[in-house]
Length: 205
Image 1 (cartoon, helix red, strand yellow):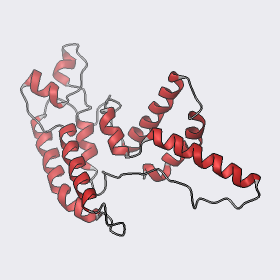
Image 2 (cartoon, one colour):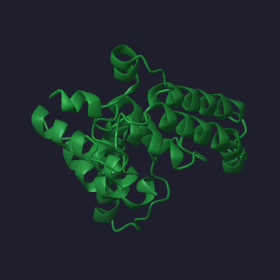
Image 3 (cartoon, rainbow, N blue to C red):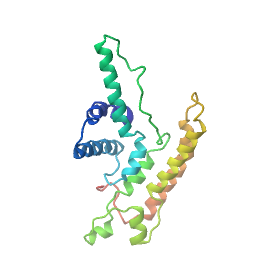
Image 4 (cartoon, rainbow, N blue to C red):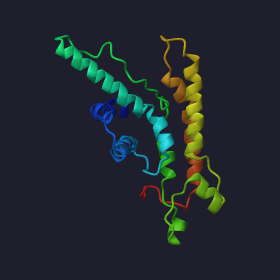
C-alpha cells in the first residue's frame, strides 16, 4: 500500500534531487523516504535502515535518475507536440519481499522497539532488541533482523525460480502459508520471554 499511495509522491522530488549537490539535502530526502515508510507500517524509528530499505524494495537512487530521464523525454515530446503518456518510459524495478507477510511481523519489530523497563528504572533508556536481551538479561529471542533475513532469502529464491518466466508471478497465498504460523509462533514466544521487561503499547523509539 505504501508503494501505491505514498511512494509516487516522491516522483517529483526525485526529479529535482538528480540535480541536487547538497549532501545534507539529499540526506534529508532519504530520511523522509524511510520515515514515511516507518510511519505507514507503524514500526519504530529505531528499526534498522538496511531492513527498512529492503522492505521498501525500491532503489531510491535508481528512482531519482529514471524519473529524471522520463521527465526530460516527456518534455521533449511536448515541445514537438507529441502525445505524452506513460507508455514507452522505463519504470523503476520494484521488488516486494513483503508479499504475503502477515502484520504480526511488524508487531515483532515493534516489540524490539519497546523501552526495557528494568534498565529504565536504573536510569538507562534502551530498547529491548535481541542483542540487549541476550547480552544484558540472558534472554534469547529470534530477533526481527534475523527473521527478516530468512524472509528476504526465501523471496529471492522464489524470484529466481520465475526469472526466465515473464508470464508467471509470485503467489501471495504461497508466501502467506509459508510464514503466517511461523511468524505468529515467534511473536507469541517473544511475548512470553519478555514478560515484565516491557509494557506493550508503551512508547517506541
